[in-house]
Length: 417
Length: 187
Image 1 (cartoon, rainbow over the protein chains, first blue to last red):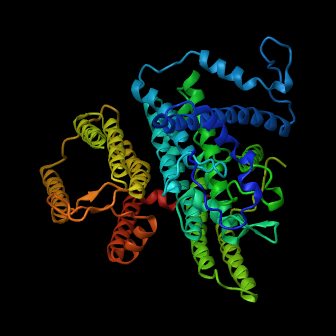
Image 2: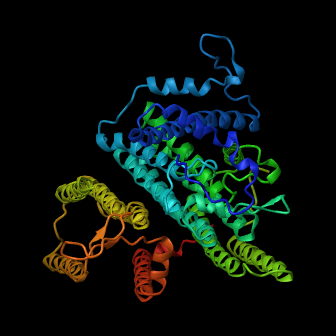
């Protein structure tokens, strides 16, 4: 976490350098102050790695618990609630459940099929997890909390994410199981299909912010209109459309319901995870959640103003708390969607990506170009600018939706009335 | 710095060489991806961040998938590892294509004039004592690359775009030749 001073365009309030804001840095410097100077940067880097791993490891553990509890609530059952704190009888709604799961997956037998490609079978979860952890490096978690500052940070994030496809294929192929291989092919078709709208959704942000660096994109979203409306990209017409496309594609990229075809437990057993057990299975699970958390973090950075508070009156709350709050809200949205939507079919999935999301994302790119060209418009022209931009978002959405769903929707349920 | 370069070079070349010698095509394809990672590492070593990440995004993310799909869809079984040429004509055309690519790349490399750059951050020395004057390494931002692509190299960019579109359409035409399947409309 570099001590780099991030340029905040306007409105540097008295809170931007408060003690709470600097607390992580102060803590780190206190921990490494006894070291000789040449060693300090190394220990500092190791410390930030350790903090990221432990914070997001814990977050992963509790997101799984939250998911099970919330899904249970939505489906009218209590969810896991019987795991006590060890050596006590305190249950606390099953708060110790993730640790019980961890111990269970560690002690379970690790089964490898006889015909499997042992090396690749072992490497697949490792590679997958490694690349999903790499994506955490460039997300700005707070005003002073950026693990690595890269000029092409956004590109780095998606490059590391793209490499996970290889791991899914390795898992499916090395298992030597027809269900695994079929599911791996399905997973690849899905990942490649949704890679395109995912990439096209963030290009407008880069276009308008004029930078590929995550810190500069966050800095470009600083400031407020009338002290209550933040300058986040999600509050512009193209930003809202981009955010929606990004989140849909992120759902698909992280294999979440309603795009969980690769695992589709009722059709393909568990897809490329079929032949995995014990801790390797847990690693896959972990990588999936890490991917989801990282993509949410990126969505916050690109569209939701990063660590910025929604109003200057709320700036006394430190920036990393805002980031975590936004992250929890997005993760909650992911869980809610999983509980609500039925799974798509394969042809619906690819059709949705190629015929709907990709054209809309391309149009959105033009929209963002118009937005940045009309930056100097003022007065009544400002209203015209918003009107045109909204029309460019809504018009193609309605037309394309009508055309694609002609003859298909609305669906009539003949058997389950 | 040189040690890192040697490590990267050995890794890249070794994975590529092993990929050539293996009989298992899937292993070869995966090793080739590892080799592309090595090339990306080299770009990072040379300070070309953008190119390095684009390399990973395009080659490891997409091109490796194309290769893996091609291998999976053209082999009848796991035991089908005959990787010799189909006929003499094909072997000759493969050799000609390979030589052509090698020739183009070789000429391009030989015709490029290399300038010796001082390491990043070190100010340029007036007239280095070496064979060529040492000047400060240029810092290419993403903006510079974009402007270059859209002005000096716009024609090349357009030609490559058209070429890729033609290749994509050709692939679709080849794949959609099964008459019975294209008739079937999804509900």
